Length: 117
Image 1 (spheres, rainbow, N blue to C red):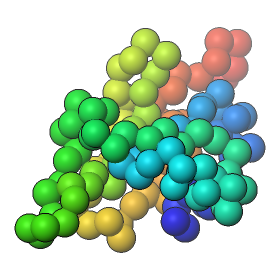
Image 2: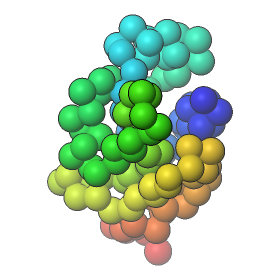
Image 3: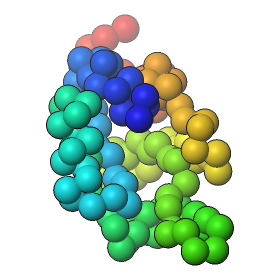
């Protein structure tokens, strides 16, 4: 959950870049509400227990037999038109991009504002 807290700690930088953070997880609404409350998150975590969104992005990870399916850890930058501009997907749940890496990706894929040099 360190990545959720890291995003929260950098929320001002995401706001400065006009970027909204949204999490999608397989957990129930009740579990998500508890995580948001416990960690003091200031962004939305959406429940996807049927893996609808997770499957749409091809992120389903089938664990060992008898275990419920989960999602591969992934981060996406999706523009206002719904186009994926950047993504980071890994099979190892311990390897997730740090907020600074995501901010750098935003800076790379976002055109400079008009009137700036």
